[in-house]
Image (cartoon, rainbow, N blue to C red; front, side, top):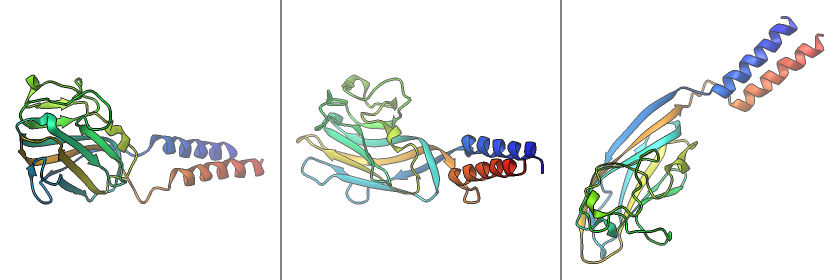
Length: 205
């Protein structure tokens, strides 16, 4: 093999390393409450878990939520990933942001939390109830980008005010991700192969 061929191989390996795997879409759910679905200030938080069985690298994630509640501004919704990262979807608790989100509006109906949406859920008024469509969440879902999606994704809903009550219905997750191919060497390995090819070419000079 000529030195020119060896340098060509090194370039091809480096190009493959930077290109990565192809992107794909993944959807999971609907998930329902692990225990009680009652949303009430006097009750425990509602918790729902969706198990993602597939291994892939997250490049984007959206969350759709359906629930019935007569004052959604009372609610705090948070998503916890399998790596324990927590992102607040809506709710004005101790984060110091303006709220409450949704105020006296009733229900979340096909409400999608999406970093790429045009309008933010932060401080939105009751006139937009039942908040159907896509909304930018309070916290950035991009915090999950780059992690392996496999594992438990947990939605936690807290009703932090008295009087109004409701019921959690269901939720789902939609991902964009890069598939993980166990047969492809890690990028570090590919880089070592490239450097080895260059070194061999120099020795044969």
